[in-house]
Length: 578
Image (cartoon, rainbow, N blue to C red; front, side):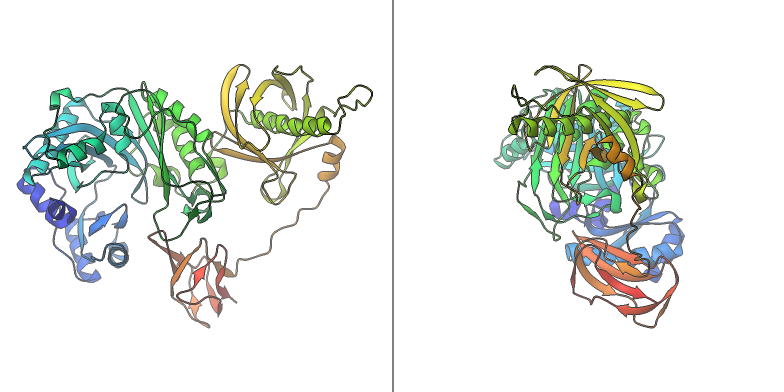
């Protein structure tokens, strides 16, 4: 079964024989890029170029013209050979505005096969899933049943005996086509476990031991809504490049659901295999954890996931948590109006800090002032300034300076009221449109990165740290995907701070820099060569992915600063232009 379904070319032929809907395409291996172009033209653009042994988005390209088909075939073949030891590539029609929806199946050795509902996996970046949910907010009960019955028919055709997934691409009119079958447990299996109350790993072991399934199709439940976010070690603000290094701090949010807990309770679950102090190397996939929530309905699940992301502390390497937070807050995601092109459409120019607009920016300023006051009170207590006869209370009016790009800082006057221990602290911001007061109560200890508390009586979770940047005075506040760096200072200091000249970083426009740690597998230029904007300059391999660096402008190569086979650091110069 694994051999039959693991080969994408053979599996499509089997699916056709089992009367499963399949996508039009050329299902035999292709030998040359020229042949790939001719086949793509015959099918009609756009097409998908896919490695037969591919998976996880590797060995897959979408081509909209002859040039993309030619280059895509070469890249797919190289990635497939390096990742899977099998360089066979085929081509099929690309369904526009598609959704990626998969059916979980389970079969035993006694001829019983059931489907365990579907998973919506359309939120993808570079064909790798980012957010998965169950059930799908898109398909109808009739479509669910039809897809499930076809998935069961395919599993029966190969006498499948375990947990597996039949993946479909679904068009905007709910027409669906077989994509591939994964003869294994999927990364996103927890969302199915939470809505069905079934432990899929347990069921796999029972099937392998020769047991019959203890339930029928009619017994399969669909309770509540589950969402999973893949937490990856990658920097969303640097075009999602892999981030490697030591996990200085790794604190997942508090969880009340666990692996192997076969129930449909609501709550939070974290599946991971890394710990504080662990090393994230460049040789493996970038996913370091799975964050899963189960809610009463979809809106409840989204709210639970946003709060869980707020409490997920990762220091030492960059993570995609800010991006996940932005996706969950996007109006179209909340409405369930998306397809596999969602990220490419809404983040076509990459992901930037301004893509995570906070619903209440002054609240972040109030949190920075609260943390500053916490440290001031602690220092005063250590120095005995609260004792009778030694009282020298710290001042309670400050200016919060929010550090902006290119020295574009903003300054806000803040007053922190004095309160008795255990009471919420009123913090008033003097804004241009008028004063705004927050009553904040925080439960924290010295050194905590994650804080919980309430603002105006409503609970919140955020991350706050002081002195973790190059400037030890900076307070970093992270909430709902937004990161703010600020310095809380004396009002007179703020007046002088605004007069300080901005020191611009050095001009590196004449260099091609390594955007990530990785292995330099190719330098495509040589000294003295004229290079046009958009031409390939170098290729770096990291975390199983091939990353091509292109020239950003026309120029002449002055010097090659790194050689093929070198292990590169972030921002290491590879090529210098005149």
